[in-house]
Amino acid sequence: MYQPPYHREDRLPVQHALIRAYPLGTLITSGPGGLEGNPIPFILDEKAGSNGVLKSHIARANRQWREFDPQSEAMVVFMGPQTYVSPSWYVTKQESGKVVPTWNYACVHVYGLIRLIEDRDWLYSQIRELTELQERDRTSPWSVDDAPPGFITSMIEAIIGIEITISRIEGKWKVSQNRNEADRQGIVAGLTASGDETDRAIADLVAGADAKK
Image (tube, rainbow, N blue to C red; front, side):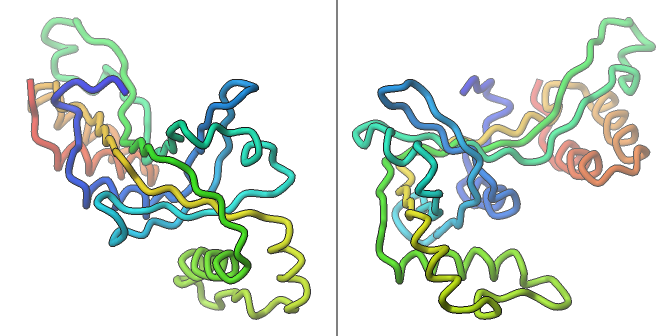
């Protein structure tokens, strides 16, 4: 990933936090047919390995699990908040006019070898944990136990587990660190005024990041 020094985010807890907040990652693998990519929700086990372990499952009907090269690293892309940044928010626009639009975002790229898992107990535990993580804040959370056991068994037979021990991880927070303080304040004000939740998330990242020019 292209990484200007001022956009690098190497703090593992910060990288992990983005994965937890945006668990739908794009799994990218290579094989005989070339590159293959699919969006898949992951669980992060932060305590396993030096960088953590990703756990998920994929449909048996999905050819990706059959065709990936087990000797080559897979990549999983986790995209956090992202939004367009208008040059009209920059003080520099009034001063010189030498401004252009950009796009701000935060993302994490994860790399590691894939291990396929067919153990039913592992798969049951994985889908239960994934469900509980997503349902926990609901007024009436749905549980795997709410479905007939035979139905869940048939669903488990239709999937295969995926585990990726993270060998390396990269974080990129492109949040206007290269702009001067006045321009950054203008970006925060412009994004906050939009009332959009994602814009607000980026505004918070811009406000909290160290300016590096």
